[in-house]
Length: 262
Figure 1 (cartoon, rainbow, N blue to C red):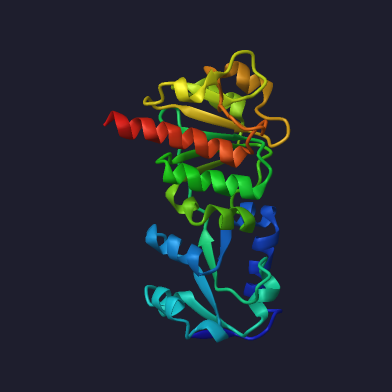
Figure 2: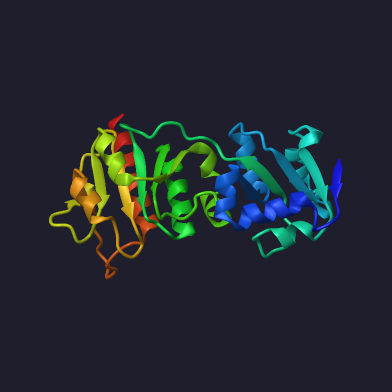
């Protein structure tokens, strides 16, 4: 197995750039997965990494050996202890790193189920929504301009492997997308004129859900172009849920209704 011993190695520097710079990820069409769980999710989705970097001290780890055994040796590189920790974004020492090509999502959805994110900027919220969408069977995700970079380390960690189950359309002009989408569009907006009670809606037909910015909510123009606004009833004193929690509630209510309808 190849061995890297210097932090000045060009491959280590490249990993560091991809982990810290959205521009580098966009221009190179690559992302870095940190940790065993994301490599496992990648392989289970049938995606072959471009290269896997293994800290020397962890090459005897049973789980790492199992995953490494699924790959040809040409895709495995051993790295001296401490080098990957210097390049990575994690704080708990060396972790296995996987270099992957960012998958192409195909054409933007014009019908069918999808989740639309309007200027969501918190990586944890974005990643959690991806995970909830995957769990609820919604595969198409459309991220408008101003959203957190979906392939950043923080979003990848929050997504827990959901990235490889979804078609992720990024940097989309949402107003233009809305003109071509032909199924119902629901927006979560507390301050709209007459929002519908989520639990009184019929959600068995394909639809798009729009979830908006953590502070300002869904853009007014998108609300105006939606087929309706939705509110989540709450009995407690809390005024609202954060974006990820609201998305999870809506998507799982949709899934619940469809399971019952079968």
